[in-house]
Image (cartoon, rainbow, N blue to C red):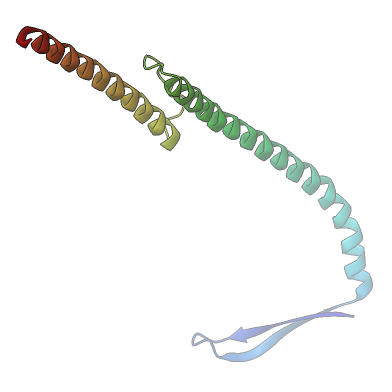
Amino acid sequence: MFSSFTPIKDTDGTIIGYLGIDRSLASVTEVYEKTLPEAYRLVIPVVSIILIISIAAMVLVTRRILRQVRFIKNTLEQVADGNLTVTSQQVTYDQLGEISGLTNRMVEAMSNMIVTFKAVQVHFSKHQRISS
């Protein structure tokens, strides 16, 4: 015998009784044997498809993030080697994309500082030659 009980409550939430259902174990087993294989035939493919789609989406997002990181890394490596004409390609428009844009601004500012420094250096060297 399989029994199930649930409380019956009034509007205040006070339990005023219980509702009970008794079923024979044979009828529960019969329903179980009929519905479980059918449920498995439906649930397993659906869960498998959802899992495959989730993994594919995760791979695509990860590849896109890593692509942006590679662009930033390559730009910074070239800047470290002295190339101040390089720019980082902005692939995403999230925080990594912002970092890519900031990297470009930083390289441009460094380049401008060097140009300004060279101009000041030329200016002072001309004044030193004139005063000598």
